[in-house]
Length: 209
Image (tube, rainbow, N blue to C red; front, side):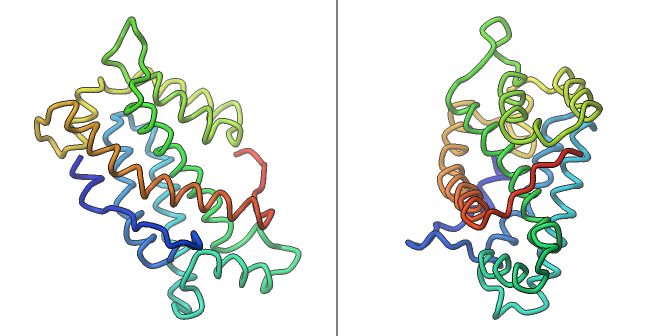
């Protein structure tokens, strides 16, 4: 749980604008989350998240004053790139990043909600599959979907996943889940706000990879 709790996301202000710098700092600690899922099949999602964070940071670093919020980056790129937008720049990187974050959000929420396979209560396949169905599946072609199915069968037991999330420490399951609940408060609000922003600006693209 240390992996999540040491780098909490900020509480959103009343206008629900996501500040770029604190967001990038918090999100940069999330790629190792996919190591906790055990299978190397999750490596492409991890790499995708890391690469997209790097792309957004590169744009932010060109003008931190102008790009104080993620919304300001999207608005500026819309003006800058014209007809090419939103298929370019930090806008495209954040579009894919938010989907990876949604996967984490749905997966963790499913865990704390107690959703499980009654025949195999210590498996996390039900949770990971739900997250994949909601966050990523529609954007993946047949081959990538088959790879993910293979990853599900290699997913660790819940107890091993929670231990990995706690950096190897033995922590009681309920204590772990309680910390995940706390982490999800600001994290979920941030992910939801980014999705709302993309919907409002009509910046989402629906192609598969």
